[in-house]
Length: 276
Image (cartoon, rainbow, N blue to C red):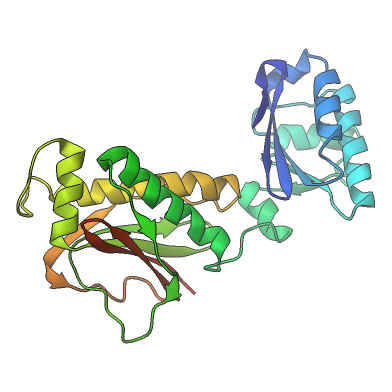
């Protein structure tokens, strides 16, 4: 993220587009710095200008945005204004620009109108952040080395058995799903013992929440990576299921991939599902 909010704006770069968030300080500040930064990216990416904090856009700033808009059109891209207040729209009408610029209610609408919302597919681009987050979380929090096995699509009648599972929903503006992390008792007890610095020999109420916390940490790390790519995944609260050799099914409708992980103490499994 390139920040320049003290100069009246902030630029955040994503795959395929940039968001320029304007601040009310633009009414008194020079556009020179923005002009240089936005020129470097506008020909390669769609530009979305967030106007939520501004009531007017000074003429010199409008000239820059207009130039970016015209240059982007040459590359079959565009500049779009979002979160435009009624007062700002009236101002743009007075400047004769209300039919020149494109407008959208918010970022979701802007991305949806232009096909920028990510597809709901369980590809490596979506799965890999969960693999990396799982390996990193166990290494940092429990000092346990783990390796991911071959990722595969879960069969209709296949069931993964475990003794404790952390479950968390995937919620975004364009798709839903779930992540389930299932541990055999032996593996979970070793992980939680290392995390808490105390030896545990059975799953009881004192450590059940640890499965939810592990799931939350893994999900949180993966979410950061995916949202940097524009997936827009929202924060969610994990839940925990316990029971000897339990299985989980029907949490969400859609394809499910299984990622088996191995540790020196035994295997565990991560299931990732996206809804249709």
